[in-house]
Amino acid sequence: MAVRKTNWFAIWITIAVVVVIVAVAGIVIAMNNKATSPAETPTSSHITKDGGIVFGDSKKNTITTYIDFLCPICNQFEQAEGPTIKQQMDSGKAQLVVQPVAILDNRTNPTGYSSRAGSAMYSVTIHDYAHAYAFMQALYANQPQEGSAGLTDQQIIDVAKKAGVNMTSELEKEINANKYQKYVQAAQLPSGATGTPTLVINGTQIPVTLNPQTDILPHLK
Image (cartoon, rainbow, N blue to C red; front, side, top):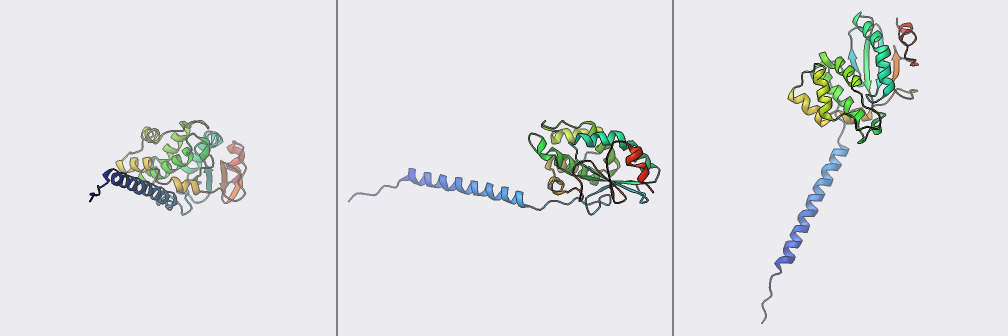
């Protein structure tokens, strides 16, 4: 009677196939979990429930700006009107509320710079609020062009350090992980707004002309 031989080759092939299937399934599950995981909400005494980053203590006037860190006109707005807004903040006449959005998130290659920069802005605000305003200005000063790769996470970290931010290991980890990226991606402009920058003073949207004499000062109490 013939003795049946064990086909070890077939067995090992079967085992290998099963291992590959399990590994692929694990990767797919992990990716799906990451894609469907809820957005992390930035929480701080300097961040409103709607995600606005508050600079200045005065509530006499509230100047709200919706900005995208890739938006060149937002940069022009900061250069033209930022000093006037800062003066109003420093004199106790107004507070500034900055709302990062990512309407140009697909304008870099790879995509995602707008939301990564916005995420970093939240992380810096939470961990080193004293240097958050300087970091915002530094992001504008180092703004990449649309169509470029944008700044890497490490370059954003370097920009923060040069702006005086205390780069703790936890903060660096958050920036590298883009902790609040999904939150920024989900952020919306106010009703009626068509793009960035959107300027709202005391609840009223103001057309942006890049002239603080018409855009800012006449609308303050």
